[in-house]
Image 1 (cartoon, helix red, strand yellow):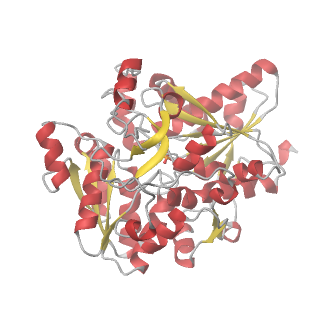
Image 2 (cartoon, protein in one colour):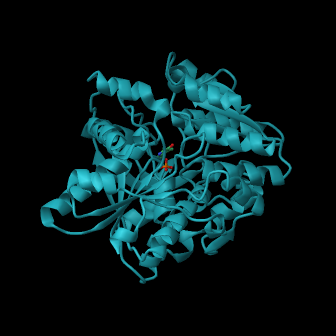
Amino acid sequence: MSEKIPYKIYLSENEMPKAWYNLRAHMKNKPAPLLNPSTYQPMTAGELSGVFCDELVRQELDNDTPYFDIPTEIRDFYKMYRPSPLVRAYCLEQKLQTPAKIYYKFEGNNTSGSHKLNSAVAQAYYAKRQGLKGVTTETGAGQWGTALSMACSYLGLDCKVYMVKCSYEQKPFRREVMKVYGADVTPSPSESTQVGRKILAQYPGTGGSLGCAISEAVEVATATPGYRYVLGSVLNQVMLHQSIIGLEAKTALDKYGVKPDVIIGCAGGGSNLGGLIAPFMGEKLRGEADYRFIAVEPASCPSLTRGQYRYDFCDTGMVCPLSKMYTLGSGFIPSADHAGGLRFHGMSSVLSQLYADGLMEAVAVKQTDVFQAAEDFARIEGILPAPESSHAILAAVNEAMRCKETGEEKTILFGLTGTGYFDLFAYEKFHRGEMTNYIPTEEEIAAALAKLPVIA
Ligand SMILES: *Cc1c(COP(=O)(O)O)cnc(C)c1O
């Protein structure tokens, strides 16, 4: 059987999923609702519609409908770069001399270089259909901003991006790609918003954070007629759109009768991991099959492994709704030495609930190990991986090496979320031996957690 499996399993356009899968429909314990930041009551559709466009609010709040049709216009856009290949990592297996069978779903085959385009085009499409003029967002390293700029230029929407200032300065390439696609890119914190001015007054010279950029983007969206805010991770709607990753992977594996034992993904806000595992987790929840799921996070930003499952703000400015999630506290900022992405202080509420229910595992890994795994992978499998994706590579390799010890022929599936061409400053730091592994102390984590809001 295994001889017949090609290096790359491609699906035809017709085999691309026609609907996204909403895992929440099959969860017994639903993720907790978003709360209004001033009243601490569940956010209503009416309240959310000031921030997000209407169809996305509907998707965000729907815990019951298992499938959402993918509109033809979005499917047509997807066809430019999807279905994405599922790769059998024969070269890696051979190099590791492992009996494990390794597959990865590669999402880096588009100009933005990551899976984020899957949700960017969906969010831009619904904003356009509602007759809006534009959208605002934040971006850290720039993958989300790049993906959104591509989607907005395709659909004819304005796109205002608040980019974390240190990335704006240190990562000029993604900034310029966003400009190629017509986006308006502002370094955050900026003088253009109330919250930006407040943070600048409090922390002059700060390089910014994702949480702060979110606050600025939300302020501009709610204060500008015809604009809404869009977010590239964490939210239920994003995980819904990213389910296309898992649905395609499952269709491809089913074609060859392959059933993975372990499914691994890197976890920042949880969207790629949530999307990859969705159809498999659905089977597990319905009692149809069993799988192990592993979330991989950086040891320098360990929300699942060292955070608390509590309501918290998604942003530093505390203007966004509260989400119940594994969190390190909205004031937590990873050490300046951290270069591997996945810097968000919290986690998707869906993944948080699954983790709390013992349905998913989590591991935290050190960034020098991650970059070593990235470089090995580039040399063996040919693809230059994004540092974020390399967290999953490392965990998959570790799993395959355990199989080597035990002789188990496990099938491992992991998500290769993107390429690392724009992360070469981080690779440079690694090559020069200047990369360190700062791991937050118990005291630092306790101090950030002590500031969590107390909800009655
Ligand atoms: C943004 C990003 C991630 C992390 O985001 P999730 O929402 O956790 O998926 C991982 N890999 C790449 C390449 C990214 O751009």
